[in-house]
Length: 61
Image 1: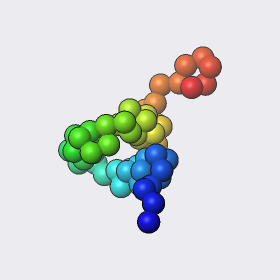
Image 2 (image 1 turned 45 degrees about the horizontal axis):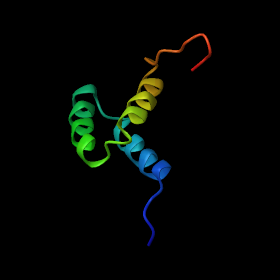
Image 3 (image 1 turned 135 degrees about the vertical axis):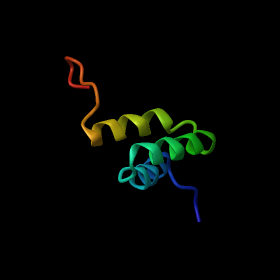
């Protein structure tokens, strides 16, 4: 079986974290930082969008 793609790993992590409370998220993100360091910034941004706390600049990003 092949390795999951970057998107697949990001999607799996996002769905695992999206329903956790803030404290649980912090703990899981800390653990993921060691396992998936390349996904952490994207994952945090997606979670912020999900929570409605993401910053949107004048370009809509």
